[in-house]
Structure formats: structure tokens, C-alpha cells
Image 1 (cartoon, one colour):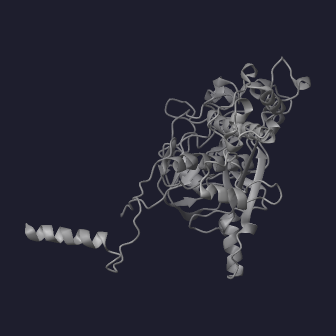
Image 2 (cartoon, rainbow, N blue to C red):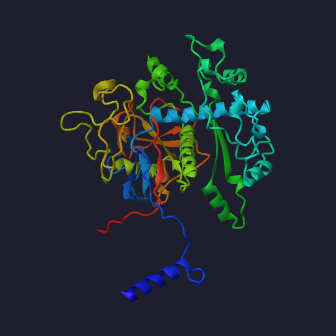
Length: 459
């Protein structure tokens, strides 16, 4: 018994004083436990035959069969809904309002040295009061200034502790009234007596690093170390284009969908549409930022990026583990054994309601595939990260294949929609749309890379 105690003590001594004894023990960090993001499911990676495994009915010859392997990832169980996208819109709306209020308070000299007072001064920038700033915060404020705007490069911190009030009867002072009035459309364009926010002012700004381009530059010139050319800044309007319900269909009455689909509570759980590829990418960036803000606040490790799925990931997920399935449910048939359609699409000539749905339906309609993913066929088509090239399958890698070109405006769209015929519902069918175009039948879902490795099944 004494020997065991002495041995345990010796091992503890080595671990506690390992560095002093010159032993290699590794760095001490908290053990990582993967956390499944809310509303997502884990798609375990593997190999599959991507592309057409049956007759190419349309004779497009753009998806020859090819064996590829993808790594594991999390994927949203449903398309991003109106409710989820509204969270993004409201966050941008509040951030725009808080920035306008903070600038107004700054103009009035409020917030400096604790001089916030009441009214609009409560919305001053958080770095306005330098009295309680840490040395690091002071250094960043004084040294990291954008030469073009005079603002700190990372943006002045807004006071998110204050709730923005949008009810005109609750505005705190005249300065607040002035700022909020500038956020709304002018009275001459109101109708039905309703005040409407000018959605053109709801812009999201972010930056991203083009690692692929940087790696290629390093390959051409191993001595290059400059990151700046590969950091891109983006700014775009993020409100959905609700006019798509009218623009997409000539000589068709779809005004109720234009008026109600995005904002009315009846459609909260329906997939968001009228979103361009660029807006979908911006949403992914915001979702990452929103989650990591919470992680920082709680002192937890940051999560990796949310993003759009690659074309290969999307097809692998849509197949649901069924290697040669025509549709996500595996069979080549569109009806179940009770004669009910298995997805929301255009089943007959002009009979949109034959599948119990005229337009899009709730995101959790119909049965999920074997990965627990809903509506991977039909309802709304989905943006992917990949650029479109008819011959891409001939030259992309067989490991995590993806062709993503910044100068290629055509982006791959998958899954078919409520207005498409059955051919586009096939898991191997490819289509595309231009990245700055929004449609009433295109939505998206996001993915996140799985960190670590899973158990490998040995056959």
C-alpha cells in the first residue's frame, strides 16, 4: 500500500513540476468538449458517390458520378426561417440605432468623464468615459485609428446595456426624437398612416480573410507575409427583397405574399426567401459574431465559423446516408404508400396544391431524411458556398471538393423548390443563380465544421 502511495505521489510531482524537471508535458488548457449548436444536427463525414447515378434526364452532363469524401459538420435541421432571420434584422436595426444615438450624444459632449446625464446621454459610446478604462482599452483607443474615418479600426463599442425604444410615445428627449426620425421613411411616403423604417439604412458591415487566396499567393511567392491584401471589407443591405413575390411571376396575383410573408407572425416558422447569396453569407458572419460575443462574455472558447455548405456537403447531407437514392428519402418515387406526396414541389401541370401546399410551407413540414434534415428536397431551393461550373466535377479534389471563386458570380443552388418540377428535387441535380439576385423560391441553411474526430467504424 505504501508503494502505491509513493508511486502516486511521484507521478503527481512529475506533473506538477514537470517543466522544472525538463520533461515534455504539453501546455495546460481546458479540455475541449464539442457543443452541438441549437437547431443543428451532426452529419458524420464519409465517402459517397457524388453526381448522377441514374439517367441524366435533362442531358445537362454537368454532374458525372465521382467518389468524394467530406469531413464531419453540423447542419441546420431546417432552412433558416423568417423568425431566425428577423433576429438578424432586429440586431442590425438596433445596432444602427445605437450607433446613431451614440454619435448624437458624442456631438453633445455627453458621456465623457461620466457626464452621461439623462436622455440621449445614456446611449453614449462605452469608451466615451475614459475614467474607468483599462490600460489596454486606452491604448487601443489612442493608437488604432482608421486614417480615413478617424474611428477606431474595430469600431467604437456601443452601449448594448440600453434598450432602444421604438414607440414614439416613449422617446426620452428631443435629440432622441431627431435621431429616430431620421431612421424612418419621410411622412410623404407613408400610406395607411403607418410609420415604416427605411430598410435601406439597415446595413451590416463585416470583414473576412481570404485564406485560400493568401495560401495561393504564398505558394507563388514563399516570402510573402502580407495579410492586408486578403482582408476584405463588406457592407450591404440585409433586409429581404419582398418584391420577389411579384417580380418572379408575370401576370400573377401574389401581392398577399409580398405584403405578409416576411413580417406577419403567421409566417414565422416558414423559410426566409428574397435573400441573395451575399446576404446569406452576411447572416453566417453575424451568427458567428453573435455566438462568440456570448462565448467571450462567459470566458468560453470561441466557436468556429458558421457558413454556407459546400455543394458536396449539401449533397452528402441530402442523401441521408443512402448511397444511391434518387431523392432524400431514398426511393425513386414521389408518393408514399398512402398516395401522399413526400415533398413540396410542382407535381402536376399548374396544380401547385396537389401536394397540400401552394407556396412554401413551414420549415418542419414533411418527414426528415435519415440525418434528421427537413425539406432537403422541395419547399425552397438552397444557396451553397460553391461557385457554379458545368465541368467542375472533372477537376475538383476528391477530398472535401469545392470550387469557390470570388470572380464567379454564379453560385450553386440545390434541392428544388415549391415552384419546381420533380427533376430539380433529385439529390444530384444542380442549378445556379447569380450571387446578388434574390428569389421567392431560394432560401438557405448554415453549417459549422465539427472540431475533433469522431469514432471511425471499421468494417
